[in-house]
Amino acid sequence: APQAVHGAKPEQAALQCGACGAALPPGRALDCATCGATLAINRLADAHARVEALAPALRAHAAKPAPEVVKRRLDALDADLPRRRAWAKEMEAQTRARRGFGRAEGGDDGDEVDWRSLFTGQTNPLRAVLLALVIWFVWWYW
Image (cartoon, rainbow, N blue to C red; front, side, top):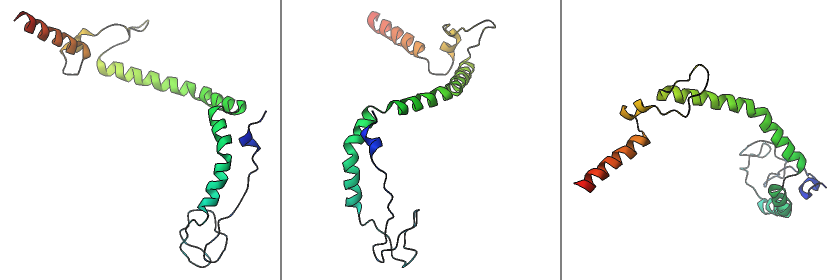
């Protein structure tokens, strides 16, 4: 069953100049092309009332989109998945190269710890933990 928001009839309306009543051209004009009056929104309450009438249907649609909307979104994600995977792989390779990790010819050594990173100037959580333990032992046995 189609959702209520899809059953609403579309309406086209042109904004009118408050001074002369001429229809305003589409776009972001600040003054009327006919009389030159500065434009202002004069029927904001009407527009708000029309949107408010659709509010329950819009909320229901946002909470549970129509099946065709879900399918369209999932198809768009699936089409983009290879690009995202390639980007993630490239970022991982750059990070590994920057941190000094290398890949073996046959596989991935991602679980290996590079102990040389303990003695570099970069931030290393393992070095921080080891330093905290040394300070605690010195304090405890002092």
